[in-house]
Length: 308
Ligand code: GUN
Image (tube, rainbow, N blue to C red; front, side, top):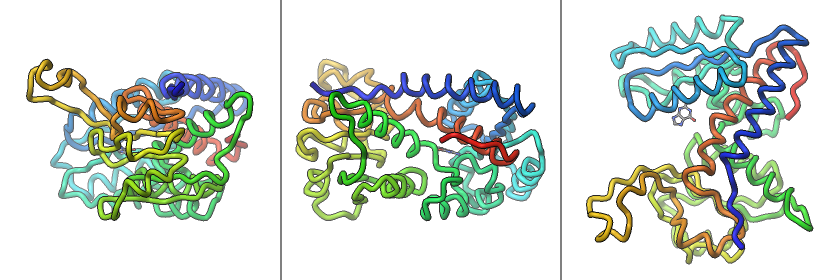
């Protein structure tokens, strides 16, 4: 029987643990973690993400500071706001929602965020800390969420709990947000790691060797059953909005499917030992990990021990 990895339930569990730790930080140290989110422009998908971040930040007892700027905002004005937030002692985490309008240089903006408040883990200091296995690194939220789901799955196996050590993990996708930090996290867990991407030759022959297969490319249902080894653990990071043009009877029931992953779930699930659904798999873990990173940053800034 294939195990369905329930990211929604695990994210709820994580948020309730964070809420308890936030309450303790307030009671024992009089510190309330604060997360500032900057949204430039009016990308509808970004507006939904930012709204969800705000709601969940407040739900775990943290302060939420929102800055919604017009598309026409200059890079200089955005950098000035980041400087103000870097210096604001009520703010422990700063997140600039991506993508930014094309007249703003993304790298310059990400490098302007204080590494201590970089709860997205995109600053080169945090990327370097992750690459050198330093425990105080702030780590990109989506791959961190994937790692938590994997560790939870393997450690809960009955009757023989297991670990990630020695497993061959294959990642499809080499983005700075997911693929590359995912590889570093899995290396730190003693996996053997392969990264595949759009220029990889004979990709299926590589993915078929994976004990753990992570798809993070943004191509709807690209991964099929014959890409996957029997009993593999499959993590689907893709969130693709599909808008079928054919009526449901002609498109095989495709109409109204809404979100699909990078993995063809119906095809792959019977072969996998465990798999994340879309929606309800990796997606809910991202904001939960953002809140966890904000708590970690607040603890580090105030010299309070943080339990990983
Ligand atoms: N846009 C899509 N994913 C992300 C993310 O993880 N962080 C930020 N800041 N923007 C995003």
